[in-house]
Amino acid sequence: MKKAPHGLHTVHGWVLEAERIAVLSGAGMSAESGVPTFRDAQDGYWAQFNPQDMASERGFRAAPQRVWDWYAHRRAGVAQVQPNAGHVALARFARAHPGRLTVITQNVDGLHQRAGSSGVLCLHGDLLADRWLEAPRACCRLEDAEPGSPPRCGSCGNLVRPGVVWFGENLPVDVFEAARQAAQGADLMLVVGTAGAVYPAAGLARLARQAGARVVVVNPVASELDDVAHGVLRGTAAQLLPQLLEPGAGRPDQETP
Ligand code: OAD
Image (tube, rainbow, N blue to C red; front, side):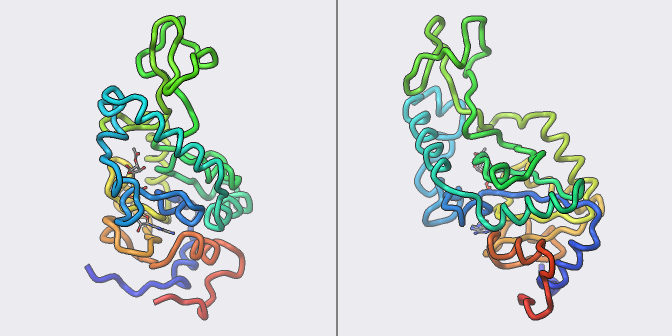
């Protein structure tokens, strides 16, 4: 579908008008911090690995050490990077306009929070959190887990797994419900750095549109949510979000095609 030529200036106007803004972010949000995405053809994780091997309970049970070590590598990676100008612009806007902006993220890297965003709705969990593979018994205490790859309960052998949502698993119910409400209550949804290929997260953009929000995609290339959007800004999160959200931004001379 051909998009109306809404540029940065127009979308900046929509930001100013909106009483409630929801941001749906994905891996591209953190790309300029140096965190790899999943589906980028050259350097996305899923160009290297099969998601069913590395991001499913079955994959973990089949090769716990391989999967644990991959998450340990990703944990070490995010510990070395910093939030980028896009994360910072969102956090600053929310601080300057309390109650107006909700960040809903598919990211597990914690960079929104490290930039100062509060109340971030983490649909896919937290890369840095641990939890038990099996329902924990009285003997299972994360702080006492025997170190290993993965760590395990010294009494019953229950394995520790990363606190992220894997394929085939449900999103945390309360977080998803809050995200649904934020999407439905928004006047404007910014869809930043997601391919829009994973549901139910991507469905939040469709829900926002159905509920009457303007939807804007921020992505350097085409995404599966472009057809939902009233405006598509072709550029990166760290370039465009400061221009959209910071005071004095979006002047006509900054118009993008
Ligand atoms: P993807 O890797 O599928 O998509 C990343 C998107 O970011 C692509 O559309 C890129 O074009 C875009 N992009 C790249 N660099 C960008 C930049 N600097 N600024 C803005 N956009 C940029 O990542 P997600 O859509 O987040 O789930 O993937 C969704 C889920 O699939 C992830 O949460 C993960 C994955 O499997 C689980 O692990 C459960």
